[in-house]
Length: 135
Image (cartoon, rainbow, N blue to C red; front, side):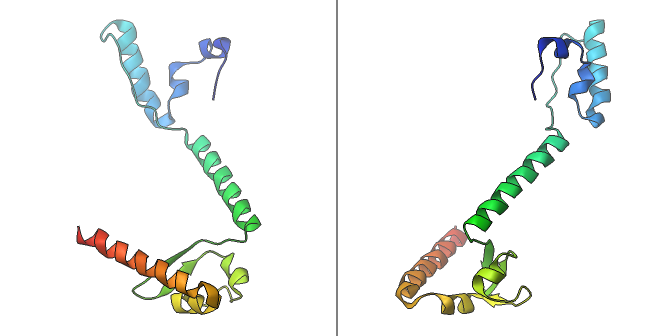
């Protein structure tokens, strides 16, 4: 957010603080003005409304990219072999939305020419995780 010099001059110092910080900001400003302190600084928290709007815009861009790229998000629990997945996955994988999907089931969907590469990648992934946990 940017302001012209005129807009800035018409603002009150607490206009730049979240409501919950305005009282503290005003008290410090009054001390500065009275000469009780020669300076002060406050770490400003990002505006929640602006942060929420940015997050919503980012999520919408991601949703559109996922849709255009025919992709979905997932996480695989290797211990249980269960895959948690986003809603887009049902249509892409050809399964029902409420149907549990396992790593073995997804592996069975992989083209035979790609199976060896998938297995090598999974072996590498599991190996790296073991190394990370041993530290």
